[in-house]
Each structure stands twice: as structure tokens, then as C-alpha cells.
Image (cartoon, rainbow, N blue to C red; front, side, top):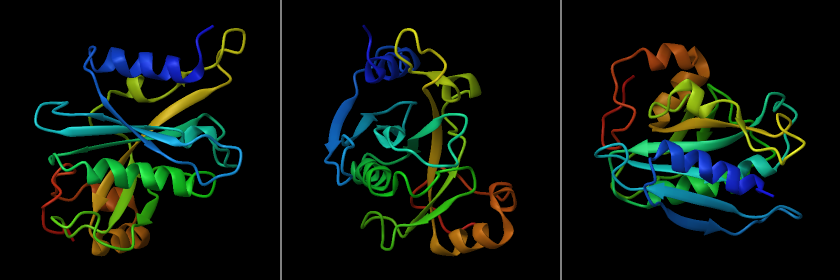
Length: 189
């Protein structure tokens, strides 16, 4: 019998064409839930570091009606702190934050010393096609279609951008001139 995590990792293996990731566990602080794992792909796609989580989707949230999320961040930095920040958020906020498109998250401090960004926003992952990030069936045999993961993109942003998104909406921000993978960029608003 293939487990939920094995089905998810097989999906990621197909997407990465067999590239070997690094795994970083994040210990659970939630009673009855296993921890979160950061799955880090170096230089995938070219020049970017891409991290996906596993474990956020083990929680429940009333807004998760068509599947539960896992997170994906792709940045032009080799600093593994970006991966650890996303793993930390997934573990700490699972069950309380829906991680829906347009959600913003105040990290409360600089995410890394080398970047002035202190927040994140959630939208579709720019490094994955729609069919590759939505509706990933991880149900056990006989229960297919009842356990679905949707991979959500999470993007580092500046505090002024977080406030702009909260006031004006994600679309107004997303259509501005900015590079979502550039962690050293200036604010777009």
C-alpha cells in the first residue's frame, strides 16, 4: 500500500524529473500532528532554490473544502533560511491560517539578514503549471479523490507591500512591476 507521503513525493519526483532534494524536518508543536518537512531543490528551476512543504495539509481548516495546502517558495537565493522560514510558518500556522490566494503573513522580523523583507503573500506557484499544483490526489487506495493537496505559492514581500495587499487586494499588487523570486528587490509600492 502506498502512503500519502509516498504519493506526494512521487508527484514531486515526477515534477523535478528525479532530482534529489534535501529534507529538513520541523518538529511539531501541534498535539496529534506529525511535524512538517521542508523539501528543498537546489537550482530548480535554473538559478532558483525551490522549497515545498509536507505536513501543513495534515491539519484541518474550515476553509479547506477542495483540498488542503502545502507551500512552495522559489527564490534567487541559496540561503536555506528561506526554506526554514516557510517550514516554520507551515508548522506554526497550520489549522489557523487558510493559506488562500491573497493571504498575507507578517513574519514579524527580517526573514534573513541579507533581505529587508518581513512578510509573505500567497498565490499560485510561478514555477508549477496549474495541473501540477492543483488537485494532487494523495488518497490511499480505495479512498482516491478524498484526500487532495493543492500546492500554494508563497512569496516574500516587504511590509509596505503587505499593507498594500491587505488594503488594495492581491491583484492590484501582482500587476505591478516586480520580480517574485528576487529577495533583494526594492518595494514595488
